[in-house]
Every structure is written in C-alpha cells, then in structure tokens.
Image: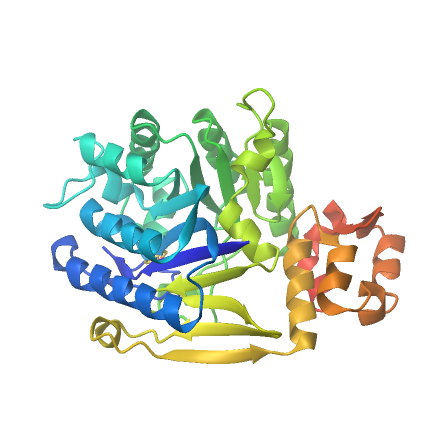
Length: 394
Ligand code: SF4
C-alpha cells in the first residue's frame, strides 16, 4: 500500500511533553498560504523526482502540529495538488488531526464548531477525523500544557459527529504525572460515552532531550503502567472495540451488513506503517519510507520552517540495510495483534523468519509470549506487556 503524509508544523501553544516538530504561534500569524503553496510545490517535485506519479494512494493523513490551523481553502489546495499528481483511490482514507480548541473557538479565519458550516466543509474533504483529547481531566490537561478543557474536548467530539463525520478517532494518553488508575478509568468511561469509531490510547513518554517542567514529572512505575495498559485493553475490548495494535482500538459496533467493521475502522494509514508499506511524507520535518528498485530508503525533510517556505527542500536520506529492514518489519508487524505473516516475511527478504532469528519464536511461544497461528506469528497479551524488551531481541 502507498500513503501520503502531510506535516503542518504549527500549534497555538507548545505542550509540555511535545517533541514533535511544531512551532507555537497565534492563529493569525500562521503563514497559511505560503506554507500550503510550498507543500504543493514539494508534492510536484517529489512526485516527479521519485517517479511516484502512477502510485495508487490509499491513504492521506494530515498531521502535525495542528493541521486544523489552516483554513479549509488551503487544506483543499494541498488535497487538490495530491489528486493532480497521484492516482488517489476512490475509497482512500483521508484523515485530518485536530486539537479540540481549533474546532470550538472562533479565530478570525476558522473552522468553528459553533458556526457549523466550516466544520462541515472539513467533513466534505476528509472522511476521518482524529481529535487530540488526551484526557478529560482538567487538572491533567493543565499539567500537560494543553490549552483545551475537558468541556471543549467534549463539545469538539459532539460537533464533529453533528457535522457528519462518520469515522472519528480520539487520542487518549495514560501514565500521566501522578495519574491514578481510577482517573484513567474515568477517562476511558468518558470516551466510551461518545461511541467513536476509533480510540488511540498511548502511554505518555518523555524524550530525554526535552527540557522544562516535564523533567520533574513523576510517571507511573512499571507495575502501574502494566495495570494501566491492561485496564485500557480490558475495558475497551469489553465495550466492543477491537484491540488491533498495542495502543489502538477500532470500533466493532456499527458494521453495515456484509462489511467487516473492524477492518473498516482500523486506521488504514497507520496500518500501512506497521505493515512496512511505502509512504511519502511532505512538509517541513516530514519523513518518508520508499522503495526504489531493490533499495529501501528513509527520507526526512529538514526541520526548518523558514527554509521550507523558501522552497529549499533538503532531505536526509538513509539507505536501509537488509538487516535493519528485517528488524523494522518484524517489530512493526508485532505491534499489531495480527502479527507477522511468515510467508510475507520470506517473500520480502528471501529468508525464513526462523533463519533470520534462530530459536526466537520458539522461545517466545514456549514462554507464552507469542503464538503461532498457521502462517502468522503474533504476541500474546503477556508478550505485548513486555513488547519493548522483545523488540530489543530482533
Ligand atoms: S498540540 Fe500536539 S503537536 Fe502541538 S505542541 Fe501539543 S503535542 Fe505538540
């Protein structure tokens, strides 16, 4: 599969834990037109240079940053440029990330839930919305440095649904500083009230290079983290969600007749990452994974917004060795409950998984950390709980 990722590196405020490439500024100061036009130019250049024009695009994902800080006309400009340069599938998943405050306040340009119409315009252009709620607890939102309140988040989800979005995902974060297991449970119960199609529940981690108050945060120890992950798993699965990746859950409730709902509401774009599919990342700081001939490449655009606005597109290019590719492929696939299709591994690398990693799967299976189901090797719940340790063995 082939997907396109567009990075919009602007936010209204920098969150205390954030190590993404994003710059905080007032909504009216975002260089919307200049940035959108630079992205369109990069699309043209990369499509031609990397010989991608005939690639069928099955997912498009606008992430950030806060993509909903761009006016709809600039989001449309970028979408149109993608359609002009690539063959976008009729059923492509087209996602936009949004922060609740950009969906409920009314800055001069904007996407407002209260006004309704601009929100509906987003729904006409994007068929999936991913809202960064993180928690419904105002105390924790404040610690995290988020600018929305629990109330704003709730309004944003309701307004998205009212505006016609049929595929809404919300991000929750757990393992927050001083968060109790009861508080986490309340977050999950709140999220369940909305009946959204997808929930991502990520553990908060702090990059060691980050500075500021987050250095002083008391995060849960291993035992509490284990209990929290299990709580998310147990409660969301009991509520009818499919736990399909370590941190991701797809609704299993509104399946139209004859359609597999779980397939429908899994995030196609992220599944492509976990299945080691190709994607083209565009925008300042975006990364790509492409295969050219027999070589796979990671490309990263320079994380420098002024340089990007000058159309000075420079890339860090890393050729991926076969050994690294096998490792990446394996740990990404093992993040999903579907796991590794061993015949696919063999087709791709001309080598059996067991030859690449002698005795590993045997040991994991013996210890109850993995299971073999025909041609598929996947982690069990016990394996998922120590997945980082297991991935270190690949
Ligand atoms: S909204 Fe997201 S990208 Fe922006 S600062 Fe916060 S965590 Fe980072």
